Image (tube, rainbow, N blue to C red):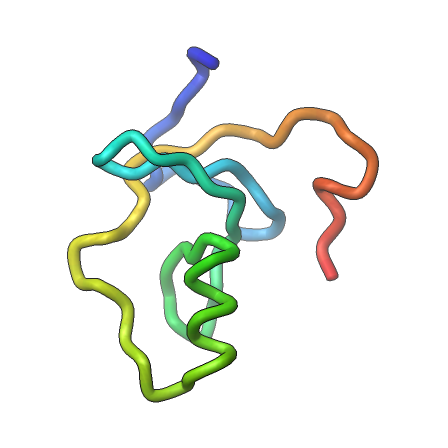
Length: 76
């Protein structure tokens, strides 16, 4: 996986891989209502507790296209 792009160039219309400063990698997507990229774990936490805020310094720094697997790229 060598094709990481700066997060500023990430598409906002589909799910992608998100990489963070600590080198963790998650699947996520852009959320217009929050004007930021959220990974799937963050999205679940926010859905469960709307009052919970995201860690200020835990935002993705890079992105990459998802690999071609059935069902992975589909947006609900």
